[in-house]
Image 1 (tube, rainbow, N blue to C red):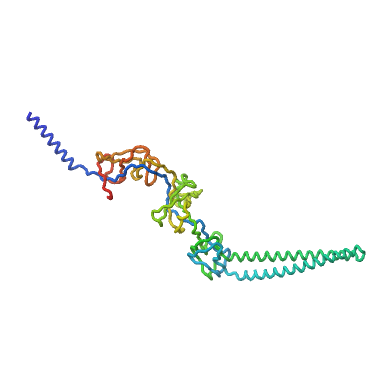
Image 2 (cartoon, helix red, strand yellow):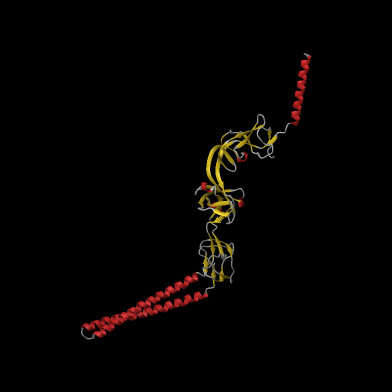
Length: 383
């Protein structure tokens, strides 16, 4: 009996030693960050792959239609102009002088036409009188023919002189058209973004196939939109009139509601392995355009689908093969689960099955030692 008690005592001692060794050598609990499974709204979105650009709805690169020397430059960069306002004109005194000359010719032609038509009227009346005398046998047939021929000739001179007046008027209009080609007027109201020229300098139209700088860059600042490239894989999902969110670096974290206006009908392949499709997004509220400038960088997040009141978890908690680690408060262990997902974006993923509301999922899955079956502790907030 004493021997059995002694054996039992030794077993207890060995078990105690083993427990002490395990306690002293056991791994420390892994600190993990967790987030609860919640219910809420989740959206499926498409975002541009590279920075987009703010563009003005109207922007005109203006230059004279013909070459010449700048004689008048009425604008400078940053200047607000009205529609139809004269911005620039080339030296055109020769054309103005020719207009005056042709207008003088119109006056002279008009007077000649009036004289010719008066002579035609006189000749016509004379022909009538001669015809009456012929009926009275008081004049020869030859004189009648001569009077009628003269009347017709005078009438032809009248019509010819009137035609000369119309030719002179058309000539003036032609020269005035050439004169218009020497001036640049604002096609719409806006702000002068850039001026590439000075008074006295010569400007020439761009040769065929060779682009030259425009003299004036005019921007309509009353309307803007966003152009952004999206990956070709996402392009089929995006449709015209889909809602979107516009984000601009210049406005911090503030977002603006938008709507897809255009999806390009072609793929850009300017860079190898980076093929994109451009989309245009309009602002929904005109007031949101205040303070914008063309050229700002911008992002467009297109909302493809929205679901209300669904189970969701942070997308950062999911491994590539749809696994998550759940923290079990009862024993402090991490348990691996495979879930079925629905809609997803960068922030949240919809959970169709595999988790329940208020389950604690690990979001620090990249830390060393975070794996299925290990003991863990929830790190304090702020660490």
